[in-house]
Image (cartoon, rainbow over all chains, first blue to last red; front, side, top):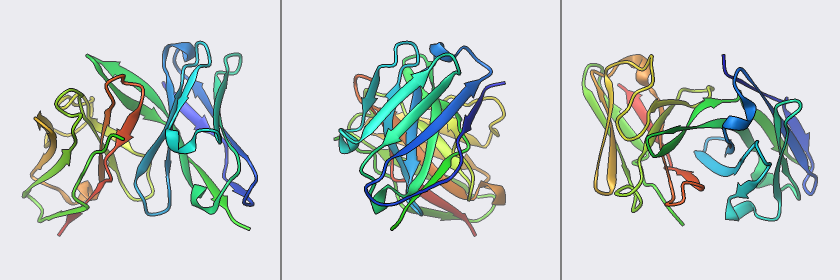
Length: 121
Length: 108
């Protein structure tokens, strides 16, 4: 069965960097794009970006351009999301999600359990 | 930037019908999906491609779309449906995805 297992909660100081992992299992890793989404406390869902596991190419939300990097390791079927120059407003639960395609439409069919990231001095 | 607009909250009594709307300029050209997020849980897709339901989603959930508005309808709301609901769509390249601000459904 499809499963996305994320790394554990992290606490960082402002200005530091974070790296969250998302290990995929139960399907052919390179066949499905992975997205990252975050949710600040009490807030809605915010799309961050997408990575194509096949070649590692990624696209990011303009809001985080320059601070956000997504990578993958095909040998371990794991994708990574790295966010630098952390600010307090980056405090959120970060989710990875698998992109599914149906008849001209993309949506998220499986989600990781989420990783709580706290940025505080 | 692309935006999807949802009402912040909807309240209904058990057994009534709840309708949650999602408005956006891209919706005439792009499909919408809906996600349910119960308190402390991960979002799960309940509607995709405007009106399709994944296996296991109860019959009382349905989706539709017309013009710039997509609608999630819950017919015969149950207490367990109390949750936040998010619509989601994409830009014309289908690379950038985005969410509505979310609607909190309260079952009175």
